[in-house]
Image (tube, rainbow, N blue to C red; front, side):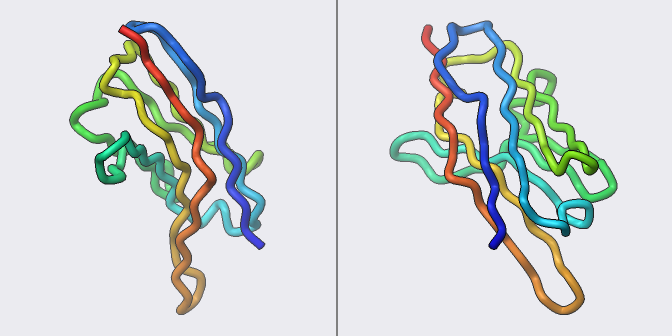
Length: 119
C-alpha cells in the first residue's frame, strides 16, 4: 500500500521559513509527478507547486519566488522550501503523487501537515 507522509509543518511568524518534507513508500516514485497542495479553511484545495518525474518544477503565481520544490529520487522524498511566509499561506499542506504505470493511472495523497503563519 502506498503511503505518503508529510512533516515539517508548524507555526511561524510572517516573513519566516519552513521546509516541508514528504516521504513516499512506493518504488514508482521516480516515475511519479509530485506535488504540494494546500487547503485553507473554507477554501478549495489548490496546487502550490509540482515537479515532474524529470525534475521540472512549476508554481502557483501566489508562491513564485518564495517557494521552491525539489525531489530526491534516491530517498523517495519531495521537499517544499517556503520562504517569506505570509499569513495567507496558512493552510493544511498535502503531498500528492501521481502518474501512470503501464495503463494504470495512480493518484495518492498524504494526510496533510498544518502550516500556520502569524502576522
